[in-house]
Image (cartoon, rainbow, N blue to C red; front, side, top):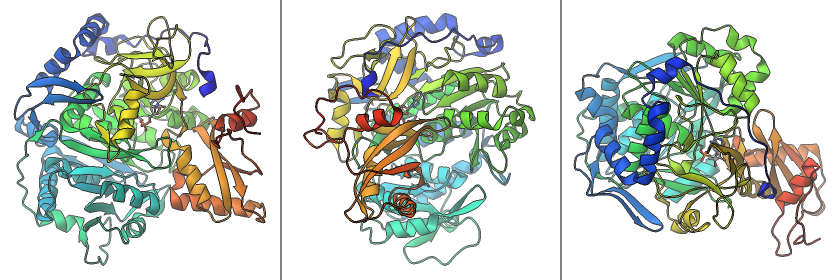
Length: 632
Ligand code: WTA
């Protein structure tokens, strides 16, 4: 990707206008957007002050809206807030006790519903349970569960009493789980016994057992038993019992605006994942407001974000954003194309989903299955259909617009990151879209494309995507590693360095091209090349390994590994399988290479750094660019 810098790309295609009804319904239409954006950039503090007063409940009002001791920043300084009050209590006080908060369904079409009142009850009990274990504000709680209502209860149960949750995606291996729990020094783990994917049971309990074996920080394990209760050992507590024995009354404790809400581990350029820390008030406000404005959320909407709560998209747009707005959200546990390639479309028809949010990799998968699958279902309830996680190519954009949106929806691409907490670049649904371009910065966000010196590049020229100033939901630190946080604001002095390459056109629409660093994006999952490489070399036969991302029709990128074996080891297909198995064990299925090639040498700089760019060029049959630092 680095070679693309300064390249000039052809302009993208023409504008696509949303249907009139979208424009008429929108909170923010074309006329007011331009002025609102201008005002929000001229005076971001004033802008966010006004939104915070209007949209959230505060126990105590803040003194200063924004404080910036570069590189550290604070929002709503001195304010007191409880995010679960905004997500639950206030809706109940407003009379929405019986409103449905979540509809859960899965591959087997099982259905569960929970109202705001019922959710509130469970969350309070869970919070009381944590208090009974002696959990204090700031203590970390790990969560290793699939997408289900109990997971959301656990998340909110932590937040209500100020315990910092750290959700670990239930596709990570025991080793990866242990690494994260240990890094966070989690005192409690909440784990489910299993999940089902493609009808197959995944034994999460066994993984949790392995991960917590000998883990010194771990004091209690709460087991969410999905069917038959099993015999639990002394550290383990049954989830249902845990809440059944508690009082349903747990007052929301007012916390400082900056109180840490959660840690979410994400991949960087080194082998060790970073623990991205978000603070309560700014995150609450930003996810609330983007959910409302980007999805133009109204009280009768049925919102479905297909992400998993193990990733930031789930945190922001399954849990906190929708709940803070009092919405009804659908959650679906399982694979998108099981039992058949129309499972999701059947769900949209059945539940009359109005706002739908998914990833380009899913769109491309459905494209491959063919138009006939969605065509069988009535998708006329849909109004806004969103995209997130990777660039959506114009072909997929148009397919999505036509076959899912039936040319009667707004298609909205959203660019953002674990670190940004919420949407940064998104062309609001009432505005004209440019397929293939994530588009315009959100209100209050100044995103531009610059060269390495920080100077804006001309239109259509490839450069670095940066954001000029901290925004309310900008992450506050990397847990235990402030220097990794500072790097984001030092790479180009004084601005947020996103790590993505982009171009901007004459109208200010931004196109994201992909990462500028050694981070892969496989099916919308962020994976560090270094993480996969260290998993590869943990195999006893492997001496050295280098990993690159290759363009892939459906996944966006696939993983190719170049492996040097230890002396005397035979290069066999069987060994490749063993190595893959090892990666699965070390990291989880998401990190397993699609392809392994045994090589005798890797291209390196004279200082010994692997030149992945040279490997990639060789793989793709393109020019390798500047190779003057190549050792051999
Ligand atoms: C990529 C996911 C293009 C990007 C929310 C970013 C995108 C990384 C888009 C963050 C998009 C996310 N268009 N690329 N709409 N959305 N990305 O932290 O490279 O899992 O840096 O957050 O995904 O991935 P993360």
